[in-house]
Length: 603
Image (cartoon, rainbow, N blue to C red):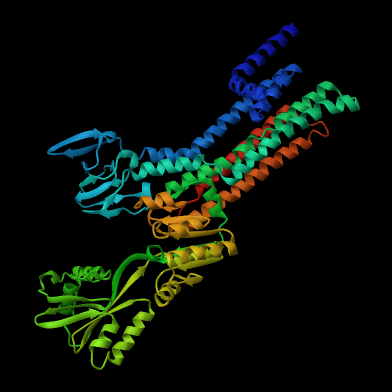
């Protein structure tokens, strides 16, 4: 009877080994023939060996626990990739469009460039495009990570997958479904998650040598004590099999990818596109960050910061005349003056200007109501006025220039009637971002600009960078980045991804502002801040550092637990149960540790 029970138990264990371990054995035996030693090969040898020495129960347990650990592993990787799946579900699959006079609902694959998309309040925008009619607030969190909805009106760009919250919008489609920003983000993040990071490459190389060594150790444990020290064959073969199981590098192999996938997914959900595990790891080790000035630390759009009409001058009349003259100018700062005139609702387009001409490199002139007006640099008025610029006005001009502003003077052949100062405004959060980076341990923050030293110093002091380099040509920026790398080894450069391409490429990590708006930024940079928001930089640094720490913890822990379990062989205490629990437990712990990266938020 007992024998029958024994046979039925063996049959039950055997069946569970075959059913539960079919996929494991299929790969393991194939690898064995090709002399490729991975964890499935080790497990296959261990289970077959357990059956040969009559440890059917233990063999079945190994298979079941291995299947559980595989399921936990795939669950955790799925959890880590969820952010990408949620990105994929963002954009609608069909949309209401107008073609000619007809309105029809079509699949997004059938929408053509130039079609007009009709987006009602509460609907998601199906395609990238330009608003041609309507006014609304659009929630762009899915693309840029911005929590506050952005106002959109005619000529503004909108992105697929964003939510139209208020008004009815009509949008002219500008990209095919596969070329939309959301499609590019998904593609780039998937590529990034599949790419091998340096620590992952190290683990793969390590496992290549580690696995055959474990097999030799297990063989030594099984054979040496019985052959040379009279040990019991059954006991030591069993110990050898347990050593084989405990040597499985499951936890080691998963230690890096789970952290990388989780971190890159979390970043994408917060509007930061990290284009590979290598860039994530490098960012975590950055010691210095170089900033382009225009469009990065500043808004990149010149605005009138000071308007000082002289006494006995009608402020609005003068600004109207200045704007009317600048309306005919090609000067880059003219747009700032026109914008100010529009904000004040001044009728500058109604002013008739005669004898308009440009004074090369100095300014412009034109006749209004039979009076000749000049607008230009202070140098122009030093030439025009008989006695030059009065001392009190010179003082005002110098004070404005010391603050990094470009000064324009308006006047006639005999008088100065007003002063305008134009500057590229500093971003509202630039100063706090620089402070946060210093508090996070960044040793040096450097502002690089082609501007003159006065403007550079004024803005550099305002934002609090530790060093300022001015009057740089693109090749000078490149040279400086190379010098910085010699000093600090790992250096990040942040710019707009277009003008700064050589410097971005030369840095360890190139970070582009406004990835959602420019394809160039998405293509050239290692990391893209989708919302054109410098405030995402400290979050990216924190996430990268945490990921680097977790990868190091995981590798150390998974190797440490193997060593401890293998030491149990010496007194003969290692069992297959302990071996598989050590392996499964380590896998579970490194996985849960990696998933902690989901908890890092963009404050």
